[in-house]
Length: 200
Image (tube, rainbow, N blue to C red):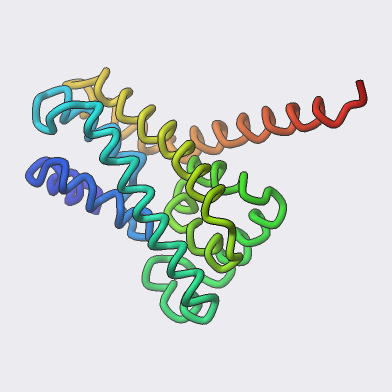
């Protein structure tokens, strides 16, 4: 699936990148942790135009995809997700897990989910079911997507022609890397909250 997506982006350019990232943010198994660095490498080799424009396109696509996911959750609710979610691997148990995560972290969970594989493509749906305010939802999505998309595309751009040699290894350990990154962000947020609550 991911090889087909990369080939599609190579042929369709920025429009292909936009479509792939939108689909990846409504549950399609696009594999953004592979697609983004590959897009950065394509920009480095002259196949995808300007790198910074490509990064902006990827971020906008994530906002559009997450907005669609939010609308699905907001207007379709749990019945729609439980009926059709199986087609994108979004089952009842996963919905409950993400919902509990949102209950614990509030709107900040949207930011954290930007760094968790699989979950990052469906977190807009439970946010919509919970009727989260749109302002913090899109703010945290934009911030997390900027870091995620920008970081991976810059990495791919730096690797350039060597990406093919490194990508399989990166894909193999991607989930571990992102879990570590998410844990580090959670730890930093926890320390900041503790310092804020500590009496002067």
